[in-house]
Image (tube, rainbow, N blue to C red; front, side):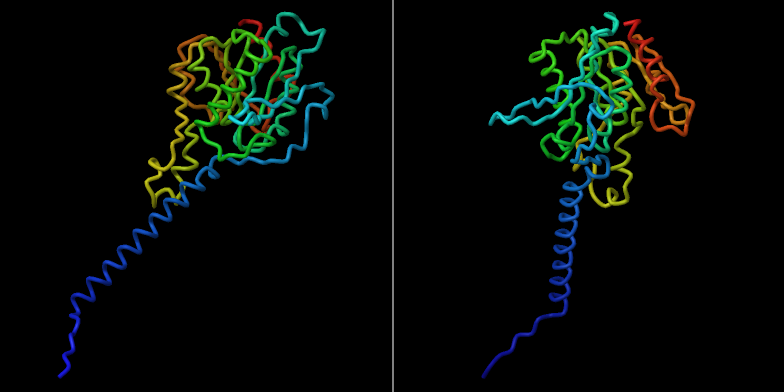
Length: 285
């Protein structure tokens, strides 16, 4: 005589509920992984093709690769534009270490570099990892700070430029990086903060997908501009649009100067306008 066992409906319901819970957990874990892998693209927008160089505006420059890895392969690429021979001595003693913003690459900075160079200073600009001809890696705040440190060491150790004659300047997200870096390097001559991103990581943490995952655990970037402003001890030149000004400048406790650009329609400073402001500040260092 054969016996047939029957499975209770409660057992089936429990098994189905467990299966659904496991599937939901795996789906959520996959969503966390995808967010962790791709959330950087909400803040960083690099391009690899460098379509302009300083030569396009008649400037002579050295194309350099630096920051070798353990295999001796350079990770970073940049341009060094020496001051003109007839530049005023009180200007040509300075070197601007330029950090561009979150979008594009070094080729998009040519006009800004020309504006700085026209004041009589030396200019060194580079692409951080993930941008232009530098090694492709997923950008992050930590890597950005490592890269500007590598650029500073290249100038001081390889080019023998005194740190006390180096001015760090950043635009956009690069301004946030410049201020954070300068806050930890009191040996620098000064820092220029050009249109910083206030609450930069809102681009990540305010995204609707960030509400579905523990975003603050998955993303380490913070870009705490106010904290850097409180800590910086070198002279600060702060440039920004009046319609988007933040309160961080007020936290700066060292020698500081703020200039507003009133022309809201222009994305870049006019060459003569920036030159006058920058030259006046540099001459007072």
